[in-house]
Image (cartoon, rainbow, N blue to C red; front, top):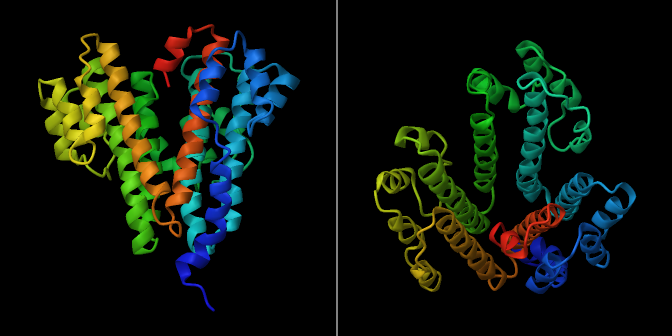
Length: 357
């Protein structure tokens, strides 16, 4: 009997991923990790987990940044493994997800370039913390860092999607002495490419992915809006320049209306809307301190994403939902792990680490 296409496509990969999901580190592990007295003790807790290689690198080097680089490599390898397991139609979509690491690595490269040529700082001890191996876009990372003149920088990035963004932002970088606009445009490049690839999927898979990606964009835009409004005091026009298109619930005109509102309490109800009544109850926690309000809002936004992922895990087992859920869970676990390890390394108290997750 010939299996229907969705079953043929997802039966094996989703069974494999569900097995891995059963091994994902839970809340108890992260709570225990935060109680570690020092970074060495924390690393020992990782030794018997899927992050054992991180402990091995730290044991060999004593360098936390090298361990973080190993975390990025392990996550990229996860995507590469999935890439080999899926059919050709899905491989380009997986590549679009890998693009986030290409973008993050390029940001790190440009930060080194910025420190060397704009701030005139010595970067000799920092150049080992970038990925030099090829991901999706071939270019010479060291040539970029070494390019003191604009033309040589442009030449080092020819035939890459980064060249257009660098040319657009180079004057702003020099005038503002900041990479803010460049990094924002790089984030937009990732999301635009991801949305384009979503549209190449089957209608069924595209609907699932577009909703989830849209929720992530909503969360990113809401976080940006809150930061712009409460910390940077951007004008509405400035804010609009840094908003990512493609949100599920929050469209650009809605975000503009929220941004120009004088009442911060209107922000979350607009995001929550129907379907998040349980989460809405969290908004009753009154906070007057600006930083506490920020923490509360971000924790609510994170809860929304968790609920969307849970829906996918409980949904159709022969769709792209399981794969997307696994990617998101692993990405957020790695983010938490990096935050906790850095918190322990800097001697932050447990409650401070929790507020930063």
